[in-house]
Image: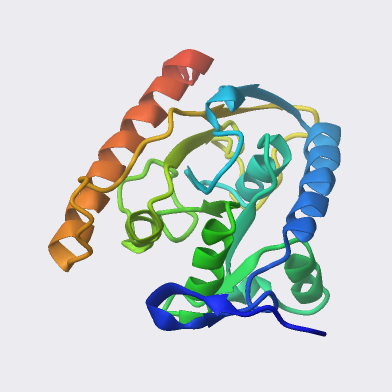
Length: 233
């Protein structure tokens, strides 16, 4: 295969074989639409807030394994998700790569994943990320620095996404939500994570993480009020 190299982040060589193919994410979106709307009844709000073109980072809360596919199946644009490397086993490995996702080692500074993710944004694509780093309460209480890094380095706007109703009280977390149950997906207003100075120091990244956490937390509270989840136990 002929490669078309271009200069990437920090002088690294980024090739089309490094950055996941856009057509793969487009296929993944079609699969996500079919599965998510076939198995459940998503109610989607605010898709018009996602910029129609250019690089975008979708930052979602994460309380259930179905949250990623739900965002992919309801997003107005194809999404390349950062997915923990542990998911890339057996037949899932070629499938996840084929639909445009990026394997990431959460225990180290994964240079390959960083290059691929920045390449997606450089190309004007959509990067999906769970900033909490792992599945939890889905309340953005603790954010890792990865989202701030990608947002500040790329300059891409961040769009918060709240997925509500996927994790049900009284059910085992690993169990799927009841079939044909409603799951709400609320897209928020895009915002810039940086302070406008262009600085990429540790202090600037820490400040960006704080700004991101405030915006994501505020959006989650808004989404709960707008969908009626705030009134539920």
